[in-house]
Structure formats: structure tokens, C-alpha cells
Image (cartoon, rainbow, N blue to C red; front, side):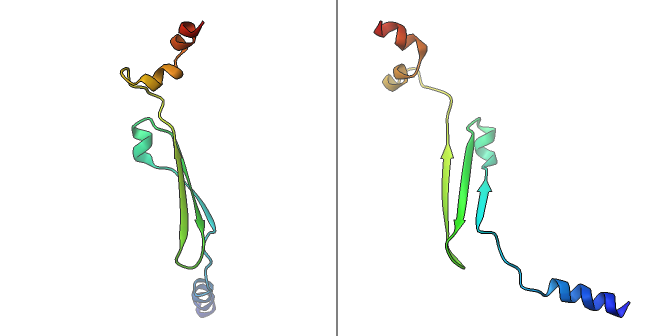
Amino acid sequence: MKKSIFFFFLLFSLPVFSQRVAIKNNLVYDALLTPNLSLEFSLGEKWTLDTQVGMNFFFYENDPTCLLYTSDAADDLI
């Protein structure tokens, strides 16, 4: 019994190394129907770099740039 407790504490006292890259997702954006993906890179012991990409699939009707993406705009160009 003493040997198993000793090995248990020895196992959990070893140094632990953290991850270098993490893939993350924002659940609040998912609830708002905006798919997203985030990557976090370890740059040092206390430094990380985080990048995030998201996409909205809705357009505003009064926005003139939305005409570039709708199928009705293609009919107007012909």
C-alpha cells in the first residue's frame, strides 16, 4: 500500500508540459448562428497569439453591398 501511494505522488509530481496549439470555438457566436473557429499558438511561457475567423450568413436589406452577393443582382446585370 505504501509503495502504491508513493508511486501515485511521484507520478503527479512530475513536470507537466502545456499544449502549443489550441483550436477553440465561441459558443455564444454559435447560439447567434455565426460559425467561427479560433486558433491559439503558444509563443512563450506567458505569451500566446490568438486568431479568430467567423462568418455571418445574413444580409441587411438596405445595405447596397448585399446586392453583390444575392442571386437577384446577377439577373439585373444581364
